[in-house]
Length: 335
Image (cartoon, one colour):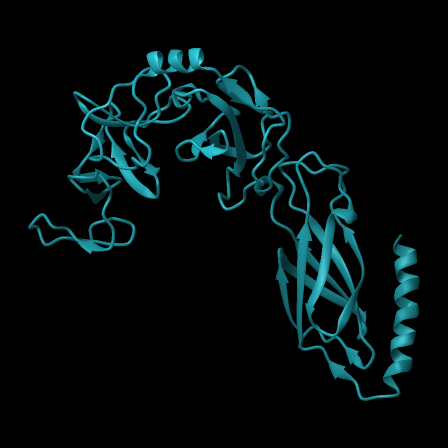
C-alpha cells in the first residue's frame, strides 16, 4: 500500500511540476477539511465509513488511511487518520503558511515531500462518544416496551403514542425497557419510539427508532390500569404547584404530592435523594428522603436558592427574599 502511494504521489508530483511551468504558482494559504464518519463500537475499521471533503483550498483528496492497527473499533480507541492531498494545477502547499482547519476532527500535524503533495494527520472523536445501533425493539408484554442495550448509551428517551397521538411528554429511562402501564388508561393501539443518548456527550443521540409491532389495549386491560395506578398526572403538568393532590400506584411517574411534600418519580421507578435533578430544563434539589427542598440550599461550599412556590433553582437574578443577594448563571450566590 505504501509503495503504491509513493508511486502515485511521484506521478502526481511530476504532473504538478510540469503544469507549474505554464503559470505562476499560488500558495494555498487556507485549507478546510470536513470529515463525516459512520463509525460504531464493535464495527469494522474501514476507510469506506469515512468521507472527507475539501471545503476550502484548491486541492483534492487523493487517499486516506486509518492509522489505528486494529480490526474493529472499541471504546478505548481514538481514530487516527492520514489524509493525502494533491494541489490543483497552478497551486502548491506551504505547511508554514497554510492555515489548516478540520471540521469533525482535530488537527494533529502536516508534512510534505514536495510542495504539491500534503499529508495531514487528524484525530476523530473518541469512540466512547459514539453510539451503537438500536436493535430488536418490541414489547415484553402489552404494557412493557424493551429493546437491546445500545453501546455507550447513558440513558434513553422514549415517547408513547396511542392511536397515533402522543401520550404525555418524552420519558427518560436508564435501562433498555420501560413500563407504560401507568399511561395506558384507555383502550387503543399503542406504539412508541426511542433513542439513545451518549453517556459522555448528551448532544450525541441516535435517530428516533420505532418497533415493527404495536400493542393493543382493550377496555378490560385499560380498566385494570386505571384500578392499579389511580388518576394519571394531568397532561401538561411540568412543575410543582400545578396540582394540589395526587393518588398514585407502583410505576406512577412524574411529580407526586403526598402528605410530606413533592417528590419526582422517573419512568424507571427511580427518585433522587441528596442531590439535584434536571427536570424539563429546570434544576430542583431533593433531600435525604427524596422530597423537593425550597429556599436557600448549601451545596459543595456554595449557596443556591430554590423558589418557594415552584422549587426551581434561580439563576442570574436578585433573590426576592429581602436579603439583597444575587445569584449567577450557575445559581450560586455572588458573595
